Image (cartoon, rainbow, N blue to C red; front, side, top):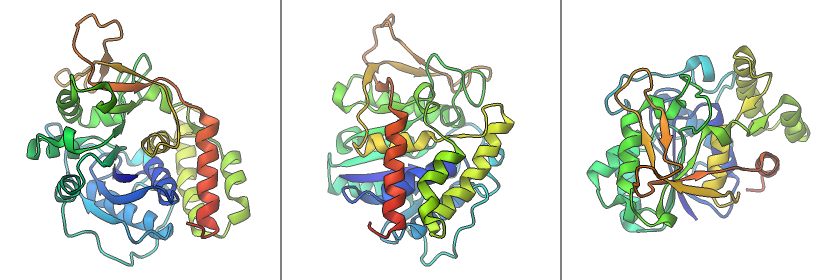
Length: 321
């Protein structure tokens, strides 16, 4: 499988990258970044460092959109720490970022391999919206598209009704969904949204069980230091001393490692109202009669997600990748 990961590398994006880095069947073509959890340049530095810790210096890392399409940039250091990775400290980089912008990387790869590349987006979908303007045939050139974003029949995590990625660049998500509306169901983007991703939880005890035998290895140390900040954040906001690791689920779905049921539906995104900005609405009863523009993940097995993560940590810790 050929996969491009588009990330705003905070803590749960880092878990997604660690997991992907350990998958021998995934050709991680490139990692590109946008602004969201942190700014796009810091996200690129974080991605480069995470891949270096995982021994994946073969993966190109390119900077993408530095701001949302229309709304002001907002990052969330209170959630992911001042550099985006909590208390984790990355090694000095042993290579440079790509001289190519993310858009150039995307277009070259999908034009050279039409229909063969899966696109995983774990931050705001700004880069995809920009790419659609540059290449309107992108939906035909891409293979699968998997997005972590939105929320349905579930409280928001940024406003009472909105998930962060959708709120951070609602115009981009609306643009993306419009581009796929009416296409064959098996080609529609897969949305891993809050009502499912908030069930993917890791506790300190589970993390310790995954890393105890590899305590001195760099990957477990990175995850332990990053997640400690995330545990503290979730506790401060009333969730308990745990972490919701949204992006890991999306990575496993994109790689085909986790089978999940989906429902094709039409999804709208609120872009005008400040009160409801970024709120995603699905037409579950097809009252408007619009053709579907997304496949919404209905449920996932949290135990399977963590088992896959544990296997990846063990493989990287033992140098088996």
